[in-house]
Image 1 (cartoon, rainbow, N blue to C red):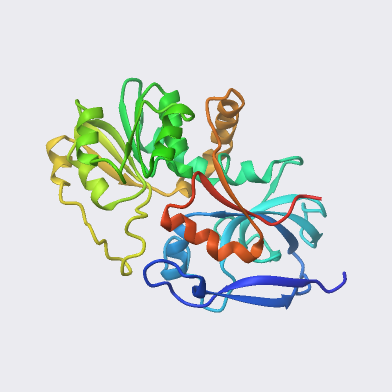
Image 2: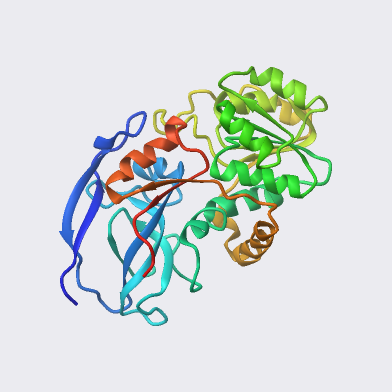
Length: 341
């Protein structure tokens, strides 16, 4: 096929502190010819997640992105050309693609290359029914082991994972308290997401809020932020509590591998016979179809809301990822490039 121009963002520098636009470099090139086993994908939308900060800086569950290579994101695109069996022009596909107009993919990498059903909404598949929604599902049900009557507290509660975790806990019969920043987000948690209470960490004393809303302690704490708020939750645990370590966004901008605020109240795990466990959603990959089916049902019944913060245009990718770390985003952070054809 005719030579295609490809705009892309390369990783130019390892971030120090908050991610900066200068950590990326704009590049214009052409799409290479396909080899057997590959597909050419026109990117439609990118997911933005705090874990990308780690990919930029260090080896995590994937190797650090090399400097000078295309920045990566979970993405959905449409096949333009295929030399891979089982994939045809027009198919919607999902995987870990570059920040670019077109990606050549051969099924490599953590997420591989997944074909989606015709008519799939790319934005829904990257949010509620994507890895963030699945993270909330397995963190709440499998790791947190929520049960009827539990007091469930989640930090980063207005974010993509935290909001869904709280809504799932509510479906399972828990009393749900969210910790979020700002009155607008806290109001949404109660009025739209169905939380029982919300604590505005920007304008309230979190310690006092937890004491007020969790007088008998916290049965399940779903942590997305780490730092001081994790420490305050540990101090408030109920007997046999479960602490789910999903993320630590308050610590990601610190020096590599160093927590600026390590927990001081971890002894309470011993005193309360509690446990604290980290996880990655990919640990549950075999159960994804079952989880997606159940969440799709809850969504169709109106029990789950899908709050999206949608930005537009490849040129705005650096600005979009920075939104995650300044608290500017409200809901799942996505960037749309194009519609399916």
